[in-house]
Length: 362
Image (cartoon, rainbow, N blue to C red):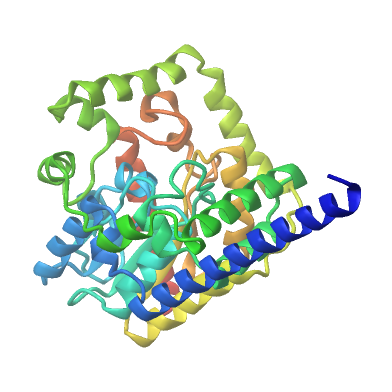
């Protein structure tokens, strides 16, 4: 084959491939547009949707906590309710769910605010690290919130984050892969037919939790799964074997107050603020809290976001100087979660700070 024919063959092959990809993209776009988004309850965590069902069935609940395991493992509703010192009366429930990081948490918050549970007047939601979608980009809960518009928003948020360039590029490629997986129809049939139900583990966690709160050391004692016990013990051993890591984490969180952070003006902040306004229009007070013990990258993402939020809608629980118990070995389970004892301190502090916000607005 001479060079001219080779070039023509390569060109035709590339055009055919581009045409095929364009056609695939068009077909999947039409299908997704016609069918619309899957209902959140069909694809989101069974633990989360079952806990939400409990909240909606109990009209006495007026306060809910939303977030990942950082919420699920660390906020004790009973301690919060009895510790809040303002004139309001709280009866709360923990809606925390492992892995509910941005952008899933934002999607779930929007769902709650659009159709709030009866009598809920207060929502407290965590600020945590950006999900890398490195291993779960095929999951239905990620596919549900993936699209061209959200992808552009994610890129803008990543671009303004206080991350080094190589990590920004890594995150961008992960979100691009998630978009490509959905946009070109991979996993479409499974996604469209998927209907999640609570697993036995989910139901056990709810049954043995305290109004949705389930610290890791309590789960070690109560779970029926030997594999889960071993997993949690292994996580705890890392900190026991290297206690200096906790001091490093403590120093990291003290030092962040002396650092100049790149101001955040991106779609993620805009969404957080818009949800505050949307909740207020429904008669709901939405407050975001910054938890202790975040990783370097978690802190680099969450703290500048926290700084960009209205002061009346944010709580910082991450300062080791103000909340020393949250960084003490006897109160910490691993490098990102306090234990049951630590949760008492964290829940009291959260209640105090939340009550202070309410008093300032009277």
